[in-house]
Image: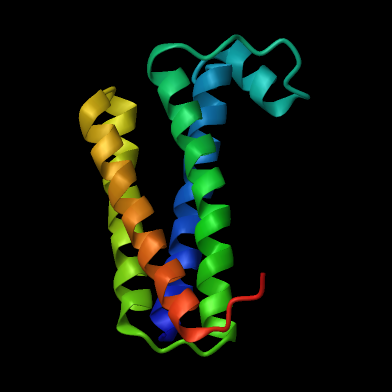
Length: 139
């Protein structure tokens, strides 16, 4: 595994931070004066996100959930020194699957969203497979 896989974690963290920020600002309607005050406040009484704001919020949360799993397995592979090329390919698949997932989910395209999500899951599966092949299983 190369340090490029670690950089993918950093890049996805930045993308996720931007997504969380966008979702928050959209939910508060920060482009209005009242919305900006809500966004700058303690965020009590936020409206329920619907439409694009709701999809952006769900995209950000889904990205965060998947990023945690991806980061753990990628960091374990790096710490264990697993050099199987499946780790690098899996990380790249996860990255591009997630990059495609974001605009597809925000646009509200259901089947394509699931397909992009599945690409990321396959990428994580490749990394986990490489880990199980390289490390002794402790059950």
